[in-house]
Image 1: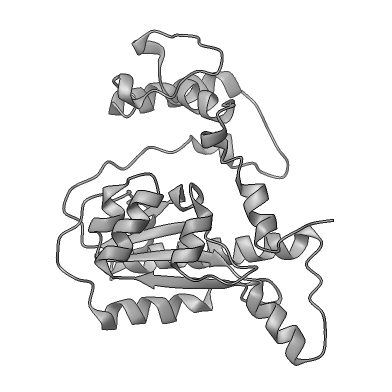
Image 2: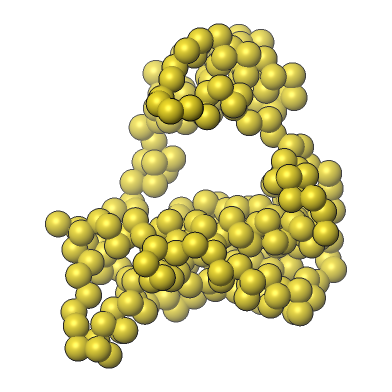
Length: 261
């Protein structure tokens, strides 16, 4: 077992996997161990769909935006907030699920994310590579149909699992002064710290080349030497593209009987 701090600091997204399967015993150990993740009020409002079938993974890869590693990875997990099970439990006891307010929805999303992070750490501690796939929200309706998800269950993101077949970059994260605040929120030296981080990211080549550039919503151009994290991230956060925003998600969630007062 590696030192836990080494594991946490070494995370990288793996997008190429060896054909070697993940042993069932290891996968079952991971999935059973991580069920002890924190969960609000012990509601455990999540479900995990384990996909190994090649044809199903091929379909999911296409629905996720033609991401080939979804098909290539030995195991693809679809992480789902699940209020359907709670609804059935309520009915068993003669109650009606009150999910008209956003709190239960938040609980289910947070429960799912906490479970997923435990999966990531457990997998990497056992030599597996991991890649989270938000692309399941590109086409959530056909994915729900493919996986036979009942109402009040929806695909939040996927997780590729397998043995790494390449040495991916460890992306530098924001400087601690920007994300760790002691006693109260601080913004001291914000612009200088962002500039420092931009220089760190620029040195990695992460956003080099036109293919890595997100389209600017106002059509602006910047010199290549000035294109780094802050420009790339601002373009993503300011985007008005419905595909980027996944503007279909509200209507989809409502179609899954998830409506909020």
